[in-house]
Length: 134
Image (cartoon, rainbow, N blue to C red; front, side, top):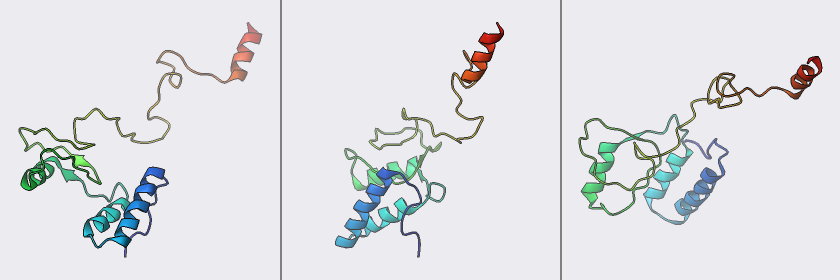
């Protein structure tokens, strides 16, 4: 059958699911069903779309001045030599925040978390003990 709801607790994703499930029930358009199915998928199972496919699809339908909305990841394509001006959130080489690989101990540690980068935050008890010994 497939998933009935997304596993993610992201409130914006949940709002999109509410909207598209309503549209799926009330309209006979298959587009809403496809979008709802893609919203249910996890990030690892969601199929990526290549940049060349997106360029071909936009040129084929004659929608150069429209904004394309994609549920999924747009991956870079080395076969494309010239990329036309596109309006799509999440296209490669945009100024977007990098995806955090992991939440573990050694990932994404900034100042105050590493001794070699400026300073290291220490617990208050250690600071008090150091002051008492001096």
